[in-house]
Length: 133
Image (cartoon, rainbow, N blue to C red; front, side):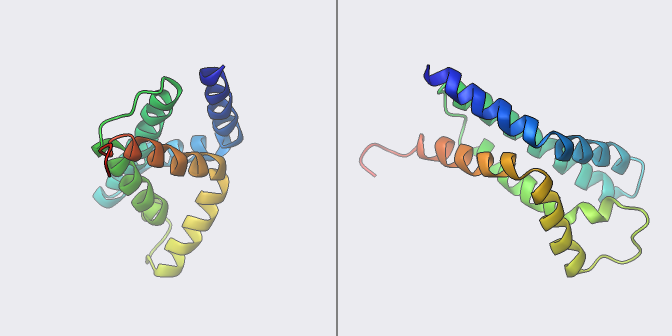
């Protein structure tokens, strides 16, 4: 029952965030044809989703991932969420307001998976804590 509930939560989060996930992966694919900075943002997007998927599977199986995985996924996801306007070839200059707007819009489309990621990171990082700490 424990695994079934966790799997249902993950499926629901991925389904509710499906539009945002598909848009971000399409953006990552298109970024490869742009500037090197845009290609880097595309790689960060893919890395963040791969880390999310591995952490989700580990949570369902109740097997904590290595400590570097949630840290790497968090950094990649945060930077990609703020910097994805760089991948837009129509944008001439990149400003802080573009980054904040991108974070709000992108975060809104994937909010269920973003909230799940917070829980997954906590699960995987606290599983490595020593028993006496």
